[in-house]
Image (cartoon, rainbow, N blue to C red):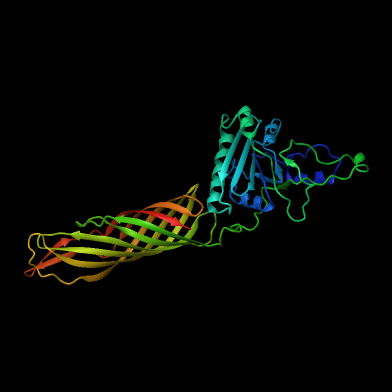
Length: 402
């Protein structure tokens, strides 16, 4: 078989005269062949979590060349495989995915645009397409293209071939996929014909470790730095208008773990436009600089990422007394600065716009441990003209660049 059970593959190569395929150890729901280099195989394997496809780990292999029309000949008599998939990454700018479901009458063809660096966006896109396509073929008997429709789509797809790596010749390559057939010679022909080389199809058991779980070359280091520009708004209450303004934020991911939850640290600074509170006797205007920092737990959700933030910081407030709307004869105090401790929490959702850009939105809340209020003293009598809330909900929109 093109994809054989590893426990029996060794015996098949040790006995060249055997003409039958090895007996399977158990049912395999999904088989995935990567058309590319050994490094491509490891990269594609790294985007699939165990049990993500069909409830079990898929069986992996690598092929050096591929004929899309060949998938129309497969799976008619396959006793074990429910879905076969070929991931062609011979073009760095595009991954072509082909799916065939048993008994060989349903197919899917998918193209995924790639950055050329196999970065986080590429991994999430591939994982999303693989998961949805395989699940559809396993659970819906009517999903996918018919044989006639698939033939029309595949007719325009050229054959692809991966250049041999160092130390690998062209003679050992073969076009894949191929029908299940033996690759060894009978004993009586071994003296008259040169021995065949082992085909350039490498089978990888499901439990084999993934080599070097780190970003591939060109995707950056283990940490990831993100700069974002945002616009935030909060409801202070106490008769004050909406507090809003632009800001900048830095986000540092501690260990890029691809499709797993990630811990990060962040800091931000925001300038809030002047907010004015008018009163008959004396009013005031406040300008605020909000500084924040803390930790974030970032969780992947398909093409999205959700972050939960906790942090603290300070509001630096510039208070400028203003003349009243009814009586403008009051003696005003000079402009003063004050600071307030603030705790903050937020839920952050982001969506990738490309290889290095994200668009996000956050629901947040600031909490002040101390009460803030603004009073006016007229003829020895003190009256309160504003008392902002200690809990201040808000929203934030951001554009991030990595």
